Length: 494
Image (tube, rainbow, N blue to C red; front, side):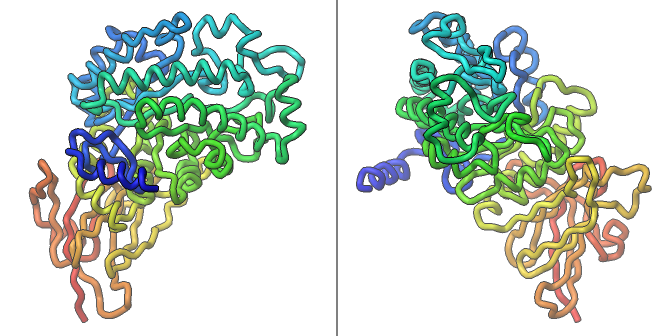
């Protein structure tokens, strides 16, 4: 306890630029300040060729990203056992810095999407030392066993070498702000692996096959994470591939870092800072809610494929409703045209408002709104009601001034930030907001509504919207197909 307190005091006293990225409560702290990740994840092979990726960096920055999630694979950094080559890591960091972008590095070690295809050839070719799992047919699979001690130690050694190298080249700059350990761990096509060692371990285990798998993967990942954190303790998380409703373990990646297995992972892998969902299903909000638990900061590293038309609605849910630390679509380098323009509008708004968002998150003065969607795609666009700062707000997702066949309510969403007193910021797209007094005393009216923008942290007002644009004081409206923010002052009368 004394050592922990001493470390905390040293961290508090250190200059902001010298503090390594860390988590404080449910927020990510970078260079001494809360940081909101406006991210995009590269395709799996995009970070293996500097020349191929080079023309994409300026495009990513133009879309107002502040962070790129980039894979680092074991096979590329340790092509020969004990011989490390960090060239891909070095140029990733150099090019991110040149474009004023941060990085989250994704460690593709023993497993990537349940399989073991990113390990070095010297691991692939030595099945005796690095045992494979056994399938239902008794044949070996291209999946490394979670019970292979040599595999665990080799993976942990490579990961430790990576973190040691990062500390040496980036420990004073903090281009790299977080690390993902492994990628979409989970067993397929059955609930657990088989083989003599795994079968013997399961015979002694008290619990289901999926719990057994989760415990095994978490313990393996804990060893890797702990080795890395001894070298350079950046925030570290694991990401989980989600299962379809009604499917059994093994029909989805069994034992992965899923919401219903969070307690198992926490117990067996305490060095992991949080579990994160990768989401490609329409039921985005429901999946996110499962991970929004105390002590598990919310981050969505793969928020569907880049270009998802619901990205804005989903981002408001993550960042505002659940006070998440960030949002990141997959294969970010692949989008252009209208898709890139829409994401740039969203990220431009969030980037300009980031200081206000982060303050509101930390003081519980923010609400987020988006229509929930089922796995089958059914949209619940009923108005949502929440209370903040003495007023009860009703948010509608069907724009009253746009023909119904010209709008898609599932893509609408926004947030409300309370600035104190009777002042609020309302931001988003395709939402209409009304207010009433939460205590029922008097009527709520719109004293003043300004559209505007934040420029370098300062509110720059535009038009005053106290007439037709507010329907003669009846509501605040943010029209579809554009991202905007309005500053609102309420008052009571009657």
